Length: 187
Ligand SMILES: *[C@@H]1O[C@H](CO)[C@@H](O)[C@H](O)[C@H]1NC(C)=O
Image 1 (cartoon, rainbow, N blue to C red):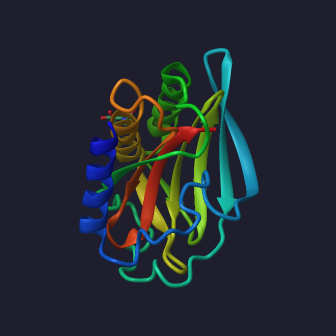
Image 2: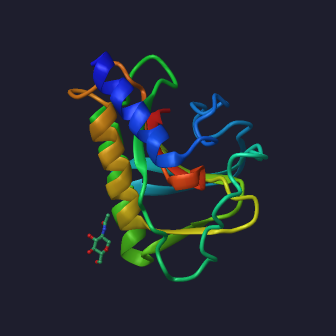
C-alpha cells in the first residue's frame, strides 16, 4: 500500500510540474483559510445535504500558470491526477458519500453546470463525507459540469478509500498547473 501511494504521488508530480505540489497546506478541507460565505441545503429523501461556498487563502506563486476558461456554458477540461492524502483519521463512509452523489444528481437535473469563483471552494457535505471543487485561480471563474464533478470525485474516492487504500481520508484530483482540484474527504 505504501508503494502504491508513493507511485501515485510521483505520478502527480510528473504530471503537474515542479511548483504545484510543494508542501503548502494542501490537505486542509476544502482549502487553507476557508471561511464560509454562504450555505444552502438540498433534501435527499429525508436527509439534508449542505452546499457551502468558502473563500480560500490566495496561493500566490503556484497557481497562476494557465488561466481557467472564462465562465460560460462550457464545462472545464477535467484532466487531473489523483493524489491520496490524510486530512483526518478515517475515510468517510461510502453511504454518506453516496448521499452527496444523490444530491449532485438533483442539482444536475435542474442545471448541468456550476461555477466556482476565483480563490473559492464549493463543497457538498453530509455526515462523514464532503466533496469539493477548489478554484485556485486568482482571477478566472471555473465552470464545471455536475456530471464531471461526480465522476472525478467518485474516481478519486475509489483510488484513495477502502478497499484500495485502507487509511487515507482524502482523495484529490489535481488539475495540471494546480489550477483547480476536486476532493472527496472525511468532513
Ligand atoms: C446529469 O444529467 C444528464 C442529462 O440528463 C445525465 O446524462 C447525467 O447522467 C446526469 N449526471 C448525474 C451525475 O446525475
